Image 1 (cartoon, helix red, strand yellow):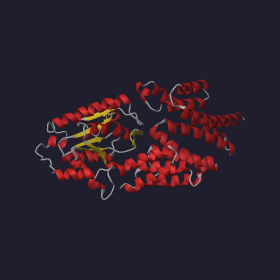
Image 2 (tube, rainbow, N blue to C red; image 1 turned 180 degrees about the horizontal axis):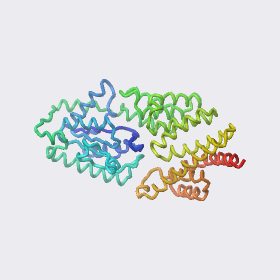
Image 3 (cartoon, rainbow, N blue to C red; image 1 turned 90 degrees about the horizontal axis):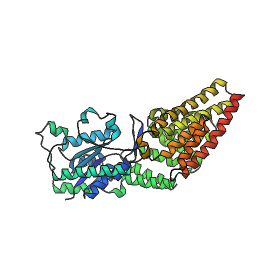
Image 4 (cartoon, rainbow, N blue to C red; image 1 turned 45 degrees about the vertical axis):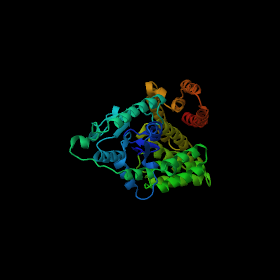
Length: 426
């Protein structure tokens, strides 16, 4: 009978709310976990690979209970993942493997109840995993699973069975194992629909992406799935269907499900900032400028990332110029201009330190970090430093889109800076 592995892990990009860091768990599952079990001829799947019909909890508990192996990724300390891991430890003495990206261990944020469990760490850069790290951890995981296959009863990995050794674990019939595998069908899975939608988005087929995402949302038991709703909002405003304004308001309506005024999710806040920014640029209404600034700034202080930060600084300059046009008092103009400069300097201070870290060379977003620093230096009128970072980007491969985007943004920023400097002189 073919063995099975149930993987306790999310799909898409998940946020570690303690740090604001985004982690693409699909990279972990598709590049490391599943290939290892495929090579060992073990059926490997996660809950998002199952047909979402009936009561999803029944299938989930059944797979946690019956799977020959369970791999639990606790990288973002997701409450569901921790709970499901606890269920597995209560039900089965062996063949449970706990993994995590290594920042969680370095920062000593593992909850007390599982900090004495063996946790196998891998290095994740958020958007992706370095190729050498993929090879290293795959080898480690394969050796670990192979050892367990040869010595299945060697030692309990469950703390429950370790500390309560007289417990008797359950047994299953072959028929029950066969039923387990029959439910696996990735062709209709949530993760497959979301993956197809992402491909359509990348090809700018936003309406097709929207249809796939609605199908995924209809098929999942969680009608407020954060990741799916975020992707729906993104594709909706980018579709500009039936027109630009209507698509922006529709995207805002979609994001209402994620509780905009209370959320601390940086991706949700970034989307709300982007949509309101586009509404301001189109309608020239101060309400949307203030809303955009409100959401970007919240995202920046939650996550301390360059994306929300550079947009926050840009919007403060926009607000300063808008104050000039409204003939506001000088204090208001100076306050907004000063806040932009403060944030540009914060970005420079933080991200130039990150450039010195050895791991920076492995990042997949180096060009955007360089261009963010270029924009920040442009904002504080240090053009030589700006050009230094632009040159660094030109030396990287496949950066035409990034440089083109930066040049468009530079034209806008220079125009705003000229207006504010003229107003200050006067």
